[in-house]
Image (tube, rainbow, N blue to C red):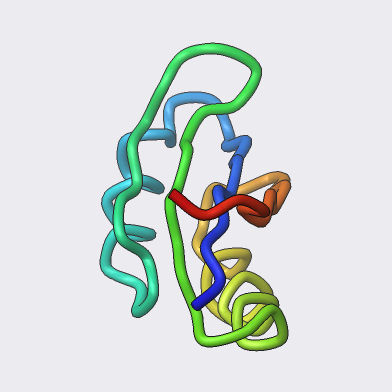
Length: 78
């Protein structure tokens, strides 16, 4: 399993709606609206990096209100 944090910037006032919609995407464990340089932080997992990339491109980036994403794969196990 590959895990990643996806950092999302949204249009002004859309963070809560984006977090709610992204939370329903298959492979997303959590999605929280936050303060700081990013508006939503997502924890996601997939079977491999390629599948993770498809999830980000085909599902997460298509959510209305998202302006930019940054995917940060987890490199260390617990």
